[in-house]
Length: 170
Image 1 (cartoon, rainbow, N blue to C red):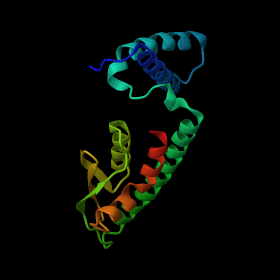
Image 2 (cartoon, helix red, strand yellow; image 1 turned 135 degrees about the vertical axis):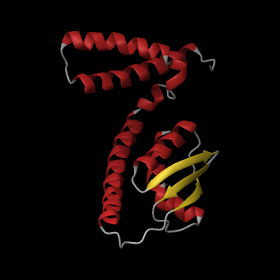
Image 3 (cartoon, helix red, strand yellow; image 1 turned 30 degrees about the vertical axis):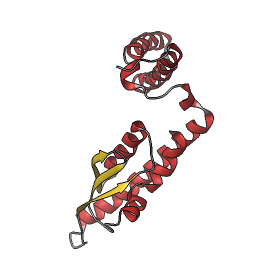
């Protein structure tokens, strides 16, 4: 467990609490006073006990610029998700379409473990690609239709769209 300063602990607690409250409200879909009060208590307890484990970020992550890029990332991810779903559905419904499965590797410009984890999950959640491993700054990805084995070109095809935005968030 890392040794955090009190201000960092408080900042991480607040970020966790805010995010957990958003999840609480999303699941309860209610703004009734008693449900919000219970949510505040339960999420505060969870946020307190998970400070050293689940929160990577301090209050700086909630700056207006970063929040803008987080929202923008959700739209970009959704668009990439739709495009890749259509591509994979086309390949399933039209067996004559060629596939060229394989594993490619590329390096990322992302420097934090958390940002790399977000990129890996985004790649995996996008149909047709699956993050297999990350070693330091190198990603290994299974790709349903390998268009190139050149690491720079593979990075552009698979990760560049996500990476550009993540560099502005983290």
